[in-house]
Amino acid sequence: MVVCWRYAEARAFEPFEDEPLPEGKEPNELRIGLFQATGLAVKDKALLWGEGSSDPRMTFSVDGTALKCTSETVKKSLDPTWKQVMTLELPKGPAGGLKLQGKCEDVDEVSGADFMGQFEVDLTECLDGKVKRLWRTLQPRTEKDEVSGDVELVLQWRYNARLDFCPFDGFVDEHQGEAPNELRIALIRAQGLAIADKNLLSKGGSPNLCANQTSRHAVELHAIDATPARSRDSPVVFTQVPTPAAPSSSRASTTPGRATPSKSVLTRSSMSSSCGCWTCPGTAPRRR
Image 1 (cartoon, one colour):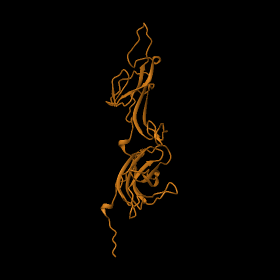
Image 2: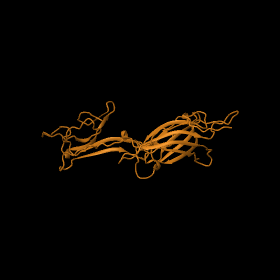
Image 3: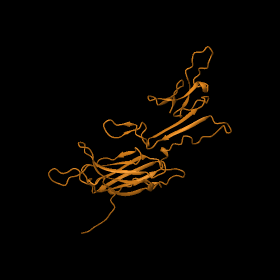
Image 4: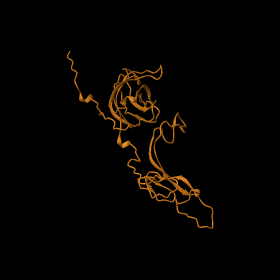
């Protein structure tokens, strides 16, 4: 017998390269390279002869968020190879370790998915932006679960400049020494929100804004709307709109956005879904 251990390009899987974090930046994108699994449990029993097989797929989620991604299904294999790359927009978030949850299932379109095992990865191991190649053994949820096998994956938690949101970068205060009269708020994201919309037929549900969903809007609140017109790049504007005044013989100003504080209210701009513009009552549309 002659044995030769060689490099086979078809079996290689190097999806990422090390990317050190830029100074002052934190990771905001988790890249998952799902390579292969070995020795999975049989979920589709053979009817007449043979040992049976499974149709495995992997689902990844981040503990405490609504982030989730699912791999393709490999038909009739106990040693599947995926070589699939998935990404999740995941900021570092509050203090505390985030965990990546991996779940393997046998896909059955008739009876539903059968549980084949699960594992977790502590993402604090990936904070340096370097590529991590790991094997994880599938674990059961209960003592009755028939689980076996290991999964190989490649992880990288990196900084992606395209996902960064710095709405006030480059701002230059041209009125130093003047009292501030405008509050600017950048709405970025929420994480771990409570479920407000219950499912009618199944468990779970979702809030109006999904947990950890990123919403990038720059918001401006004006005490009195006497500022110049905003540029078309301003996504959302909160401004004053005069409240309806009682009929009077005196000549009162009816110019939109010019009401006095005692005769005005703050209202949220409305969005036109057809054109993607934010409009305020009594003003022209403004592009997001």
